[in-house]
Image (cartoon, rainbow, N blue to C red; front, top):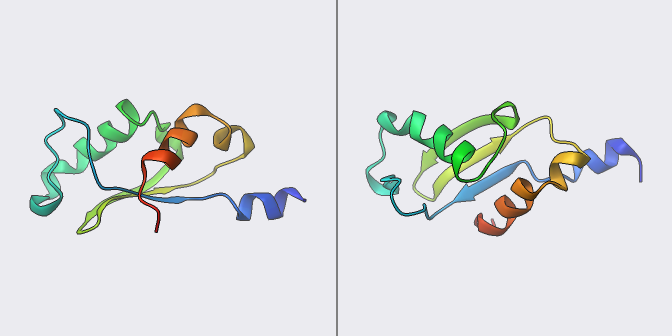
Length: 90
């Protein structure tokens, strides 16, 4: 399998429905005040490197995470495996 085909198969979109205790992020009452909290949550709890985060948003289904510039090293790293396990399958 060529590298071009491999990178096309990497998951770049994730949804988080539940947050760890103490983060005070409410999906139903979200507002722009949470924007910094979303980034902090991704970096501090999910251990996603900031440079891999393309966009974060909160919707009625949860926090949407869009990643970019992922490569083989990223998808074999612990943070990516954990993100796959805690995110909602869509």
